[in-house]
Image 1 (cartoon, rainbow, N blue to C red):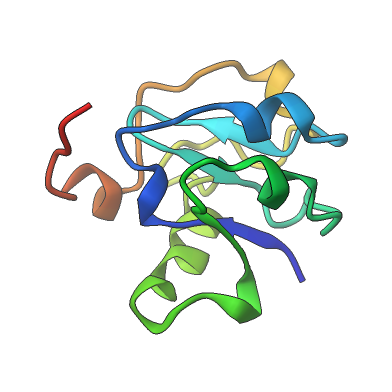
Image 2 (image 1 turned 30 degrees about the vertical axis):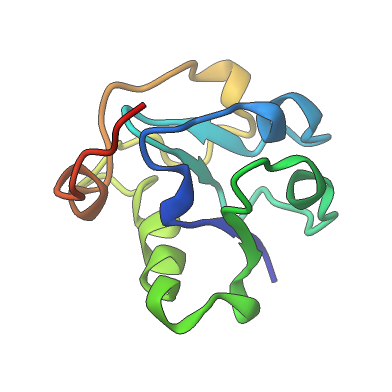
Length: 110
């Protein structure tokens, strides 16, 4: 089981979750943050600090947000960011790309 960042993070990217993640598994895309499902240890610390309540356990996603489990996983594949599994976001830094479904998401006022 891993945690998933859902739609409430798009165009917000508060970053409190990034700062508190003990395993550095939260990566920054262009419009949102993504949790690497293979690196997440399911500690739940990120959930407690997320001001937009955008983070869920993958099995607890609301029906309208279920697609974000795939979005978070696919972000790391060759066809999207190509990051793979580097073992921590610090090794990668912010990325300008997003999953195609996030890129197509209607823009929000900041």
